[in-house]
Amino acid sequence: MIERRNFGNILFHAFNYTVLTLFALFCLLPFWIMVAASFTDDLALRQNGYLPWISKFSLEAFKWVLKGSEVRTGYMISIFVTVAGTICSLFVMSGLAYVMSLKRLKGRNKIAFYVFFVMIFVPGIVPWFVTCRNLLHLRDNVWALILPMMVQPFWVFVLRNFFATLPTEIMESAYIDGASDSTILFQIVLPLSTPVLATVGLFMAVAYWNDWFLGVMLLDFVSWRPLSVLILKMVSNVQAIQAAMKQPGVSINLGSLPTLGIRMATACITIGPIILVYPFVQRYFVKGLTLGAIKG
Amino acid sequence: MSIHSGTIQSTQAKRSGFSKFLEYVRQNWILFFLGAPAVILIFLFSYIPMFGTVIAFEDYSPRTMFLSPFVGLRNFRILFETPLFGRLVRNTLLLNFMFIIATMFFSVMTALLLNEVRLTLFKRVNQSVMYLPFFMGWSIVAMVLYGLIDYQVGTVNSLLTRFGLDRVIITDNANLWPWILTIIRVWKGTGSGCIIYLAALTGIDPQLYEAAAIDGAGRWQRMLYVSLPGIIPIIILLVLLDIGRIFYGDIGMIYAVIGDRAQLFPTTDVIDTYILRALRSNSNYGFSAAAGLLQSVLGFICIFGSNLLVKKYSQMQGEDYSLF
Image (cartoon, rainbow over all chains, first blue to last red; front, side, top):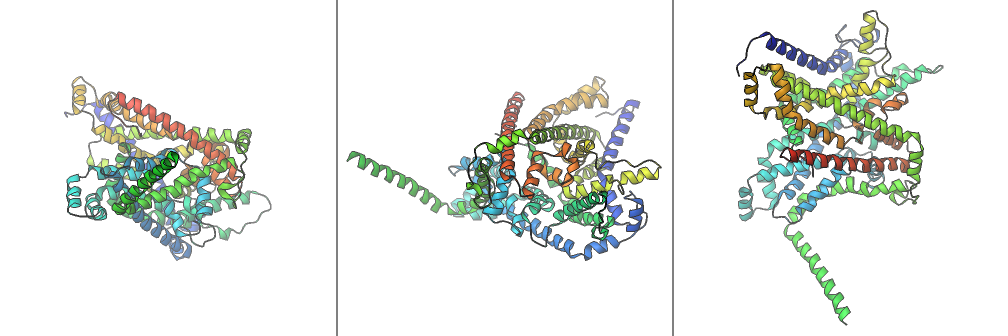
């Protein structure tokens, strides 16, 4: 389009770029504080507080965090839960999505309703909690962090819709040639669906990595916790101790508090893997959110 | 005699129906094998709890679980008698309302502005930066948030004292928290929220812009009178869908950020966080289940209503965006 270089247009662009840059800085600021604090000497942090610059450089916080066995176990748990959870979830959900996409199957609408109904009538947390702990005895177990969120109805529908758009001729000719449904799914449908699998996998992986709910609800007497739960515990311990210090006549051993730098360093290494894969997954992220708007 | 033969016939019919089903399963066992894991998981983690809501009508004890003694509507009566429930509902609705309006406003604004950006590199970098918060877990957000606003060491107060000003109390001021929650919601959700509006903006006919330009509309006017009306339908639809979920407090966010800090409950305690705390302190299962059931039913009605509106509205636009 023809662009006139008049005063109004220049002003418009100046406004536009300024607002967007400011908003981007607003999005980046917490990351910046976090990184700056984890590279700052702890004494300087205690004197000056969290500042947006590094007043005295130090790697102590990172060294301490990586030495601690709790964080290292947490890392292993988080990685295992994310990898195993995402893979299992993709297999299980695409299995059902494939069945739901078959036009020759009678009753596929009933299955679709069965899956859909749990999206609109969400049972409360209490019966869910009782089911998980008392009925299924799913606690203090690494699968407690994986199984309850393995099947997400929304993504099942996204997968089914994608499978339904694949050319049926290929599947039908394979079927006539005697291929079983599992062969068709694993050798034809899934290889053709890598973009949607990557998208669903990305969202599941982020959900598993960041989830603290299952860890808080279903882990009691174990020495290991995923990273997200460790961080949540750190936050609430700090607050509890600060609240106790306000009360008169209570002496607290401050050594039990993680130091200011260590808190931020733990947060840093938790988002580390996400930042590493971020450039590669961005387009799937955009795809997933656009999919989300189209009819499920 | 005739009755007798009748029953035999009906059982035979039933049996043949069942054996037909078995035959069907035998022929398609691979399909059952593929679909069963997901169906079973949904049954275990969604349908059993759905039937399990009966504990809202029971005096729950862990030994008898779902088959505890029936007490009728006692839990609901207690629920309505306490002033607590009103507060929970009010906070849930108010916070969700603030989140919906704020994220909608900022998503639409950034989408409109990004749509006018012609420098591809700037646009790409800007979007990458705005998407980044989406990937941060709420527990990390909570950690960094307290680093920003803490009374002693928070960034805000550290900077204030550097400039010779007095420290401000942010963390314990309950009246500020709905705004703080809204701000971090905007921080986390704007990048992901604007994607859908950007996609809608690319669908606007370029001829409209050209016609507007010929009529003498500047960029500012084209944005307000061509772009914005073009995405109004999608804005309305997304807001309606959000309103459908207005009874569900965002537990992943609010519990991670607020936790067990009782001084903030008056303005930030929502139904879900209350239930979660009750469960963690092992108290009042029946009472919490009653609150949860009420929430499920209200949520169900809301989803249904909003879906009806979405259907009506999108049919007016000649499309169908409704969920069901």
